[in-house]
Length: 317
Ligand SMILES: O=C(O)CCC(=O)C(=O)O
Ligand SMILES: [Fe+2]
Image (cartoon, rainbow, N blue to C red):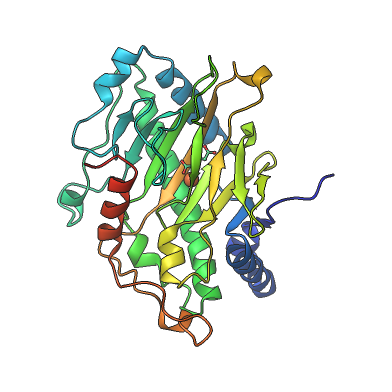
C-alpha cells in the first residue's frame, strides 16, 4: 500500500469512546490540523444511504437542460442559495473561472426564530422534487459530525469542549453540490478547481474519491488525496486558521483535470462548508499569540470576513 498523504481518524472514538479513546482522538485530530490541515474521518455518522440518495438527486439536477437550471440561479444571492452556472466562480488570485457548476443550500430556521431574517430561503427544484429536502437532511448530518469535530478541537485548544457550540448553532453553513462536467476540448488554462483555501471554519467533503483533489504541502509539492470508501475528508478553513493565529493550518488545495482518457467522466463532489453565525468574533485567541508566534490578524467578525471573500472570488459584486 502506498503511504497515505493525510492521516485518518475514527470519529466514533470521540463520540462513543471512553476517556482514553477520546483523549487519543483529540491529540490525533489536533496534530493533523496543526501539521497539514487535512484529515480523513471514518465512522462519521453520516448515513451512506443519505449520501447516495443526494448524489443521485444531484446527478438528476445537473443533467437538466442549462435553460432549466438557470431558472434556479437567483440574482443578488452571491451564489449562496440555488444554482451557479458554469464559468462563474474563480479562485481569488485567478482570472479564469473554474470548470464547474454548483448548487448551494443554506441554514433553515423555524418561523419566528431570531435568526430567521439572517437566512434567505432555500431553492426548491420542480423537476427533481426530492433534491432540496435530501440536501437539508444531509446538511443536518454534516452539522452534527462537524460539531463533534469542533468539540474535539476545542478541547485540543484548551477552550472547553463546548466553546464552538453556540457559535455554530443555527450557523451560516453551506452545503454545495459541485458538478465538473466532462471535458470536451483542451482547456486553455483552467482546471476543475484552481488552488485556493476555504473560507469557513472547517470543510467536510464527500465524493473526493473520484480523484483529482490535491493539497499543497510545506515543501511546495502537490499531493493527491485519495480517501477510502466511507471516509470523508475534513480540512481547516481560513476562519479557524485566523482564530488560532495560524496554529491550525488552512492548507491550499485544488482539483486537477483528469488524464485525457478520463475526460469523458464528470466528477461530482459534495463539500459542506461549516460556518458560524455571522456575529462570531474571529479575533485571534490570546492563547495562540506568543513571543514565537506574534499576532497575525486584525479583529474581524465572521460575517465581515465572508463578505470580503465572496467579493474576491467573483460571487459578490
Ligand atoms: O471538489 C472537490 O473535491 C473539492 C472542492 C473544493 O475544494 C471547494 O469547493 O472548496
Ligand atoms: Fe476547497
